[in-house]
Length: 119
Image 1 (cartoon, one colour):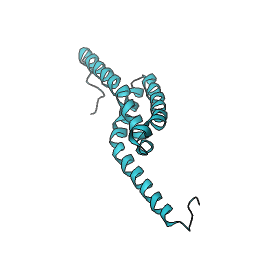
Image 2 (tube, helix red, strand yellow):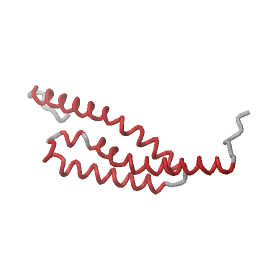
Image 3 (tube, helix red, strand yellow):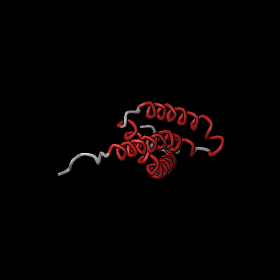
């Protein structure tokens, strides 16, 4: 729809851009997966503010990467925006997640609670 059938170079360039974007997005999934797992865990533990802060930071990072990134890494700034957002938000949810999980474990050890009865 946006490419000219008279210009085969535009198809080649579109294929290059799509390939680079897919490759970098797939690599970024190694950041996204733990970020989402920690985010859901910290929300489940009753601390949704960390997920909200992480979401805001993701937005800021995406905008910042698109706005300033091309000056440093060229067009790849457009491809790494999601990976950068997930990288920035991962510690925002992971650190409190482990802190609150550790606190829950210490409380259960202190009270002698061994968790749900699975018999």
